[in-house]
Image (cartoon, one colour):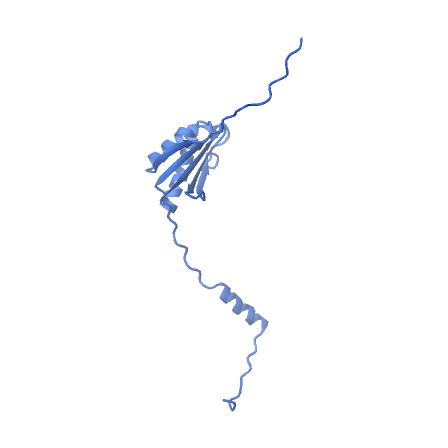
Length: 150
């Protein structure tokens, strides 16, 4: 083995970086489609807008949509129809991407879109397992004005 001549291998800097990028851009595995059968639907209904958010049971957001994102502008964002359209769009995305089918609905706010969003979910074959209202209720209120002196 000592009799065989050794070949000296030399590489240029360009070849070295090309080899490094070839290993860095190895074929990536295809991302498996995540399925979330059930989770939470948060409906934030204010006077000016309605925001619908789909999340899994841990609270990780899957998809969301608002009346403003659906093309409604100004005072039309606060309507029940705008909330229905936003809920339909978010529900379609959740069903197609994740196979969403059961939901615990959590409603916050006093806007017109509260009921319309829940009705839109049931119309799209998403089984509503429960509805919870977490609207904030003021207690104590602000300081009253001082007594009037005449």
